[in-house]
Length: 261
Image (cartoon, rainbow, N blue to C red):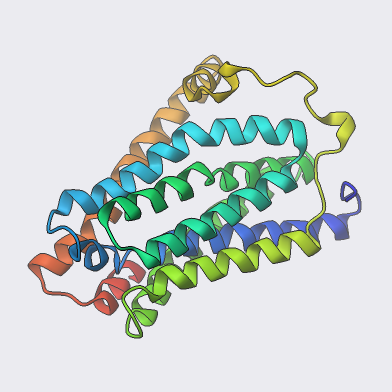
């Protein structure tokens, strides 16, 4: 597909990328209200629930830079399609369950293919003019804010059908995103602008990417601030459901509403 050029095309493709990011955040947060109850089938340890979040983040930490480097060479669209499809597989495996190790496997799969947000950010940069870049990157914040409202709300609502239903719904939403991208999203990185150098081992090393960021003026401090914020935010998100379920006897629907608020 061709690189979008006209303002109308850019606006259309940004709408699609926003939808993909929104569905990704909804899928991630839709299982927050039910994760403690699903894990409780196989383990009564609160650590297991938090480790599920930790292993997802760890897998994404190692895979996201590689996804970005691959997208620089093959284009954004194929990486987005593969990563969101991988998320769908991870959610379906999580819904099927059967043992703790299967739950961990599902989160590893989703984490490894979870480079879609970074690749979506690169897509936004590709199609944005310098004057509109900051405004267009604001779509990421909007997707996060709206996604973390809609996701837990849907998770709490659908959990009344089945405790596993939110995971399957997350998988379905990911497949919808794959379909929308496949039929409507053009490639944003023309072949002539792609990186022609072969991939090397350092391209798969996240520490190299962090090192490159730290060398740039002012970005090191900004990276630290974002890291500290996400540390606190992710930690709270992973334990509030366990706390509410074990100490307050909250239901998945009630936990979902707590996240919404």
